[in-house]
Image (cartoon, rainbow, N blue to C red; front, side):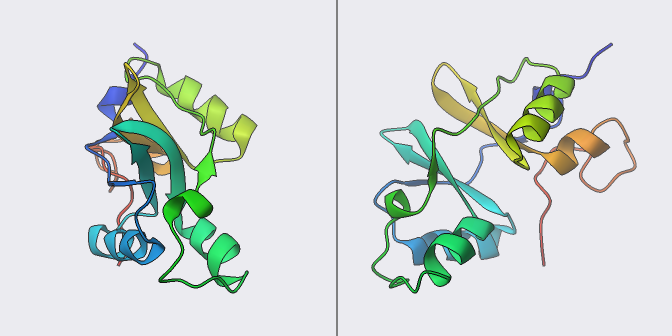
Length: 138
């Protein structure tokens, strides 16, 4: 039987509003040990900010790290997946779009996030990230 995204996703993903400062997102990523933060407005998903976005779109461009808001550097038009979709669909989307994380959306609201690591190790109960949970760093 095919595995569902809800079986491997991280529920209650780290999220911040569009107007949050970049430094707040960076601190949350560090403290929560995640590589991405969902960007929302009025509870609705607007974008995704990854650790790579911070480096490429803020640090490398010499932006003011304290004055930059998430809406200025996050990826908009993010590809999403539903919790009842099969993990094979998630893998295909990640390959096609060249991403490692997909927000999981249900009725317009983000209910989780699934990473490449989640779907690759999701069928191996002994794997470190097999029980949901985006790979934690540090």
